Length: 467
Image 1 (cartoon, rainbow, N blue to C red):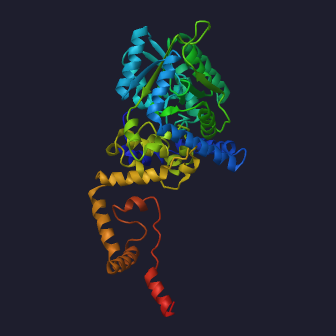
Image 2 (image 1 turned 180 degrees about the horizontal axis):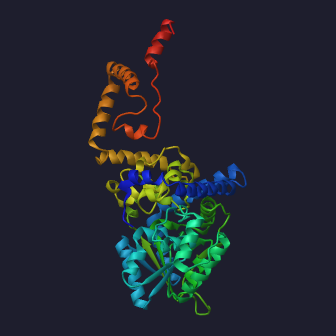
């Protein structure tokens, strides 16, 4: 997916005018947030917060020990019969999957939902090599059919309505029109079942890899994950290097915080723990399992002050509570990841120069940090990225000059007083709409009136006893 994050302002202006999309996003995120709160704090606030902090420490510890845990995971995966490959970037990861398909003569892949595969553009890379790719998660399949992109890390079609999905099925497959969601799901299941049976390669991501045992872990709700990883002879898992956790105990905590935060469930319907290809005495399962550990910029982040963002478990909770995301949807962010996590990850993974508006795509209300199941301080990271934007000279010459003038005025008591007088007089002339470049604020908000007297004036009058 081509990065269009520098167009965030223009894309968001279009998005906020789409009442249908906004209604769908507000409805979906509101339901998800309600379910998260009910599930995470079902046993009380203290228990829920304790679970969050336990999960946060599990991920932080894994990050602190990441190099050695990656080596341990590779060793144990290999001992389990898994072929482990490493990819420094998207091109190498895609090349590995193409080479696996060529080696085994594979022509058709069925996929489990994977944000990393979106990040590296895996579908396009395989299709350009003549390999058919079918998404099997219902939402991802709908996205694929409509030539769209996911707009949420958990709910890829949160921006779509039931009516638009009905119309898509009618147009593409001649489905008998219905507004019954269960009937549409049954129709999709029938269409996808043939895809499962005809594929020779299954592709998944990985929610976690347990280093101490070499276990690949997946959480899904539709059963497609289990079919993709067990029916084809070859299973390929494309996993970010940050998905390593140290122990089964850590996994037991994190799989609960992930599902409670993502879908509001105590556990998802299918919780898979894959320990390699089928054994000689087993009747089913893949004959070959590959795990491709993908860097794609993660090591660069690991070496910075933003390393804690790698603890993200991709639950989407921060998106569900973010007022900006709820107003614009995910596509306005211009790349794979939207919402607060996208506003941090996209500049870090693709370069601040390619996503300079995103650190400002936040009200800094702090709701994202409060919702995060591993307590990532996203508001602080957004502020720090704003500093980086300035240091990279991406905020514009006029702002550089303006900030310098503002700083000069704040260092001088006389200039500060004169500035206050000028502001009060100026507002009487121009009203609530400020001129450029400040119009970016008052275009969408009323500017508060300046107080008729400054604090210094009122304090001086109070001391004199005249106020």
